[in-house]
Length: 625
Image (cartoon, rainbow, N blue to C red; front, side, top):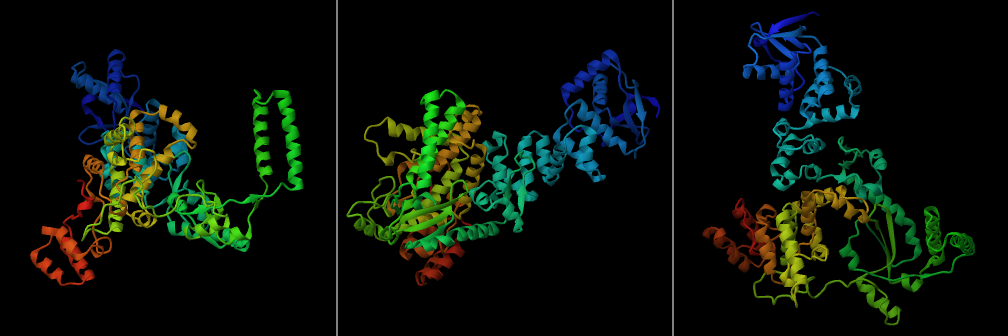
């Protein structure tokens, strides 16, 4: 193909050019070079309409020429060397892409458009990668952007989100859900720039591949049983989410049952399988300890051999060896001797008669078997067994006071049932946690206030703070925890916390160094999430709400109508009718109120639900204060 000289006025950009985004500094650099040295490389063009030519390769040079024309440094008839190619030349896209990638990194959205065009023409990721000097992974990642809503890609082109945020949307093929998540994302999460909150929102109905439940079952076993794993192509560790929760739970139950089967022959009073044994549940139980037998002859022989090796190391290197290998080996020997010296656990028939075994999933996804667990009703028997000594360890169930020491309020006639107040304020607590987790400013205020109240005032009491700053969660009862845990705010909060756990270093002793390297926005975000987890607005045993809790709710602009809706089951059938009518006030039409007075509780509740539909009504106990 020959080179033709074509006047600048007859050249225009081509839609086939791979690069859509132009770097203004790059254009100015080209303009300066052309002014000084002329066009050093010809443009690749195709014939257009009305005597025009479209520039397929050389768009930045064309932009530079037009800049010089605007500056009146060249004329409209400036002659530009061009190589004219047929419009249907299949090599044009490759040439455009190759030149742009080699010369300057293209905008990722432009790479996506170009790679997709080649892929649509039948070229595979490996072929595309080999032609243009990138890895197949880069090609696959860019092609994965095809599932992202065009509206979101347009927002990315406008610099309204980061590449990491854009890539996070690829974990879901549901474009409407993608757009909804972006629209509802708090400003603070947008400004953070990473995609963790987006991934968490899009996968909140799935189970993370690194969760303890998934690790316990095993990804291979799950997939072998027909389970699907949603992979994240943009994660170097190829993390993902397990989409079939029912299958995962069934496989976990089968594995736990298989592990528990041989234990029934040990003769304990009871055996329970508890897949997700949580701290409050553990606190309800006591624990008796086994005696330990002397080491067996073979164990004692191993102890003697190890001790001789340890003596030799200490004789040569001292008790605290400076030599790293010697120090490590000595530590291994000491740990092994400790295990062997303890001997096997020995349980008596009397102990087994009042205690049981819990089979569960441990923190890291391993099988956990706990023997000697004592239920509340058997603690008296344990005390008698040990001649009055309190062998059962752990906290008793059912405190008379609230978790923060607040005394129960005297129950007034017609007041809400204490159990209902505890449940409602538990919902309020979870919602407040969710809102604060995205509000670092209020979190900082709340944490500072809680610390100052505890440390700088004599004779302080729990009523002055709304955060349990000693870093433990709120005082839900087990029954309430089960109800609240199924709510939408609880699921979203769980997903958010998991996204943070995934971001943090695996070991806690690495956390300080990790934090020291983070941007302030990341530290503030983590503070907000952690502070949120300590919020405690639960009103136990009918206790009145703390003023500090009301202050916090107002600062968070907590609108419980966004997080909870009154139904017959969760409220209206659980409140005395007289109290209910007083509380509803003008929310009910006079005719409806009169009808309800003569109805039975269930029918009255259904009537109230129908009357209040769409009115965002919430009881006084859930209002911000």
